[in-house]
Length: 182
Image (cartoon, rainbow, N blue to C red; front, side):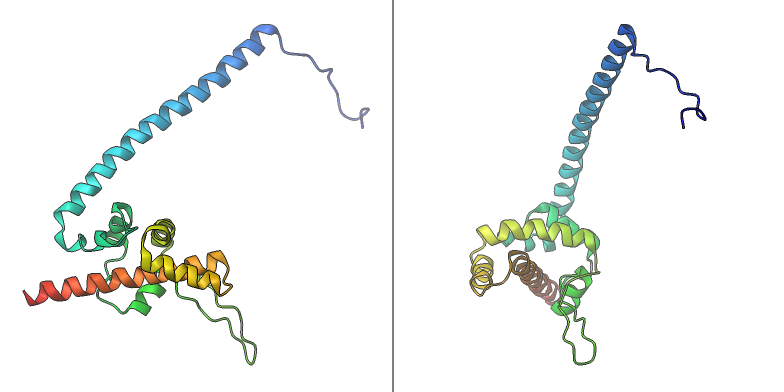
């Protein structure tokens, strides 16, 4: 192989090149930190605008009354799930992708899994449910009851996600009905 390929001997970098490489690597690290700080500032500005938009919409305030539900979840639901309160709870769960779907074939009963739906809402709902199973007594009891029955942690958490979504759906449905009658 060496007879075919022209091989060159390894030449270590000169001191000035090694020093320049170290400076360049450090510069790239500092640039990344500066960009991250700038992104934190932009994130804070966007969060302030989102909170301002949510405060202007009285019908969305009812969702904030549920423990574990914050402005990020309310904004995600308002922006990405306008059907909330207008369709059934089952349909909303399917739209978000937290309804267990069957994988049956003939006499075989497959494992029910969640899939599809609006992944962005599902991700935000997951984080909100992590908080809700700690601070929302009905959801905490529901989650602990499923765990006591032997359900896996993620399975119980997804069930709590669906329950939280259906609670939010019912609150929004009642809010829309009250607004329509007045």
